[in-house]
Length: 221
Length: 221
DNA sequence: CCTCATTTTAACCGCTCGGTACATTTGGAT
DNA sequence: ATCCAAATGTACCGAGCGGTTAAAATGAGG
Image (cartoon, rainbow over all chains, first blue to last red; front, top):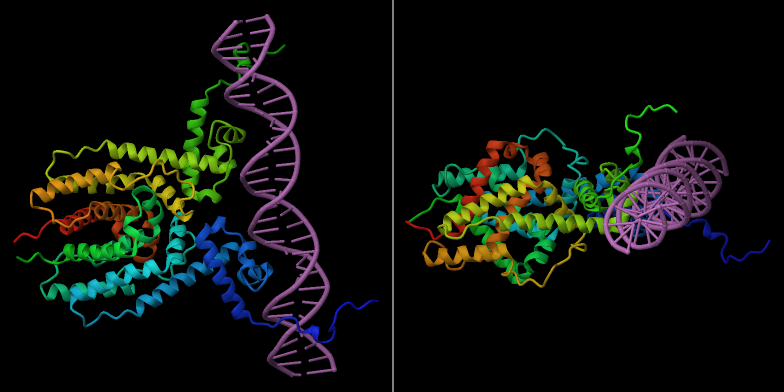
């Protein structure tokens, strides 16, 4: 019996247990892969290679591919909700508050392309993997509640139109902030990339702000 | 010899050649499948089953899966370009023309969900499968040219602001019209489906029109 | 009727990829 | 020290799926 190995005794400790770190590591790698290639396009093999652990552990912690995808999606949404909740607009003048909300959303979406892509992918799948935490009546989500408060203040101050809908405002803000990231590629291919340089994006952001404010505020002489 | 069949003579002809119809049939089935499940999610098997022809013919006519996908994408874009070209706005007052353009785009996107989904999918793939027909300098695409004309008329008439950008206007119209279809599912899950009933969509469409017009027109006393 | 390129059929194939069986290691509890 | 459940490593598998092979049927031209 030949002993080619150098240290046979201390070799016994090859790895340490760290379930939570492993879980987080897998989620990190999986988020990128799913965002880049979609649910069916992503490869478990590739995800595991971008991890400190093995393919085996992915199934150990998440059951199957869909379970992993669901976990990624859930975590991504939680992260965005946390960021939204950190934004404090109460006490500001309504117009300033709305402006700041638009600017925040516009910037935040740009900075979180992976999240945008995951939402795109989930829409392709008709939202089959989303766990709708609770029955939501629109108004009880934090963002909508926030906008509702801003609108109330704006109407009370006489600067907002009486018929503005908080839900529609959020829809508009989301639409432009989302599309700006989600469709950058095809828009650039079809119409050139003039709108996506840094200065052009700053200008576009201001256009979005102006457009929303113009639709919401009363026209003064 | 028993003759269970009715017409034994003409039976010799089991199938007829019709290459163009077969091609079109495949494209039709493939468009739906790719729109529903994406490039990697779609199954050639399933596509062929929704066709009058066989799986083999798909490879005969389109080479491979990607070739079929590219053909579907190309045809979808051509179809939309044709519809856009059919819209005639010249001669109308600028405000009316812009309103009509917004309404048309909003409605047209809603009526062509498969196209929207194909564009979403193509953005996920970073546009790798799009054939950019020619070098486009933004202004020479028909839609942008159309808006440029409207803007020129509007500025000349003194009803449009001097600093409006046709490309940005198109971006805004696209963003809201596109998002309305592309993100309906996740938006509904997160904020309820109040905006997506027929009357709510009519109201939303008007909101989009008003928002765009408000951002573009000069504020009169 | 014969020729022959085009179009269609039927059976088949190799390999990728999600998922698993099974042995082994770790580390806390007793 | 011992035990045992939780965690990890290794090797493997079966099926689905994109793509192919080989041959037959079609139909226009001569």
